[in-house]
Amino acid sequence: MPYLQLEVIRNYPYATKKILAKRIGETYSRIMKADANRITVSIRELGEGAIWRCGDDEPMPAAIMMCDIRQGRDAHTRTALSRALIDMCNEVLGLEVGQLNIEFTQHSGDEMYHQRLGSFSSEWLPDEGSL
Image (tube, rainbow, N blue to C red; front, side):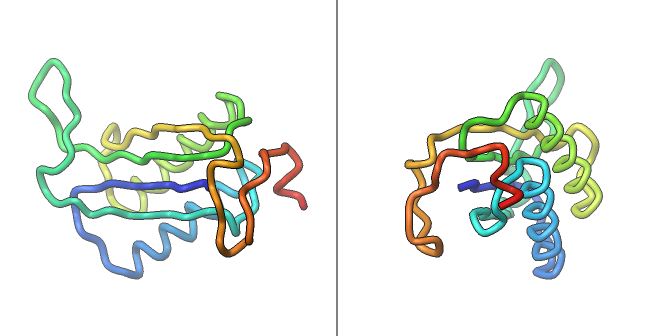
C-alpha cells in the first residue's frame, strides 16, 4: 500500500503512462512521507463512454483516481496530494479541469502484504519518508 488506481476514458502511449506513474510515485512519496517502494500505480484505460460524472445537466465524461492508503494523514495533507495529482494528470494526460476526482480509502498497515518487502506494512509514522 498505497495502491493508486487511475481510471480514464482515453488510451495513452506506454511512455506517457510510465512517466505519469513515476511522477505519481515521487509526488506521493514526498507529500505523504512514504517509502516509494510501497507505491503501486495502475492506469486503467476504460474507453470512451465508460466513466461519467452526473449532475443537474447532462452527464459529462469523467476520470477518477482511487487511493488506497495507510491511515494517519490529515485532511490538509490529503488535499495537497489531491491537488498535485489533479494538476499532474491534467498536464500529462490532457484531462479537462473538473474531470478528475480523487477518493481515499484508508487502511491499517496490516491489511496489505508486500511480497517485495516480505511483510505486512507497518502503521504509517510521520517520519517514515525520511528513513
